[in-house]
Length: 135
Image (cartoon, rainbow, N blue to C red):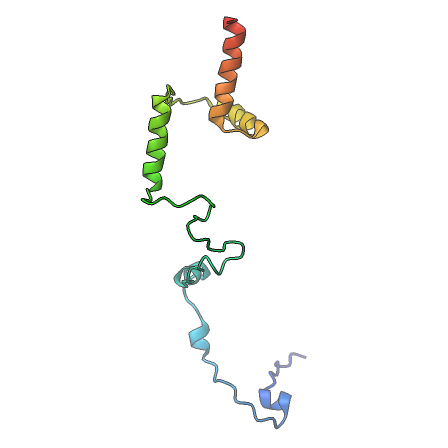
């Protein structure tokens, strides 16, 4: 009733074909670490820009298509310069902590209008001020 499973050998499957099969080392295949760690250890080389589809290299242009600067600046410096110009133009930086309900409503409005939260707040303040102050 309980017959042992018979595993066919390559010779029994393929007859007298002269096949050279590598010896199987089962102990090497057993990985005692987790699969995530095994994947993390494997490193893949980064593809070059020429290898990516639709990312061809254009001399003198960045990947986003804007002209390269003669003296490239870092993203941090570029952001700081943009903020400095906005402050000189009269903009003010605000920081506020909102209640959970207000924060959820703000996120919903921003998603509905497909605008950043700062734009939603600016629009609401300007509309309210124009109604209340009636300039």
